[in-house]
Length: 127
Image (cartoon, rainbow, N blue to C red; front, top):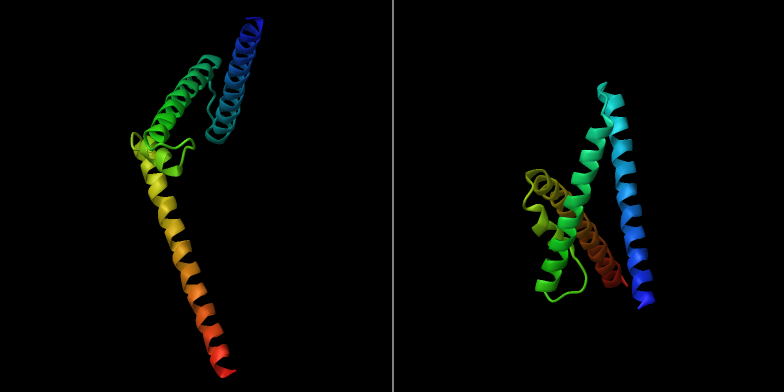
């Protein structure tokens, strides 16, 4: 029984540390953005952004787990992330851009691999 209590306490501590790390990171981002755009973020604004970010990440995590579970997988895949991203037009456009770039890289690799194969075939036929 005390082991469960300790585990629970450790989980609470871990949760609070994670929340503090998100708050710290949001504060740093706000500071950098403020410097770049000559703006100042109040402590309350930083706290609100951090809390919103933390809650949204929690929602994303639960959704990702559900999508993976629905697909009978224990590992979250990029396809699960794309499903979650459907809610955000900014994320959808990001994935479209990165998919386009990845597809272009794959096509270049295919072309280069094809050239190598044809060279190898030519050299073998000469021998």
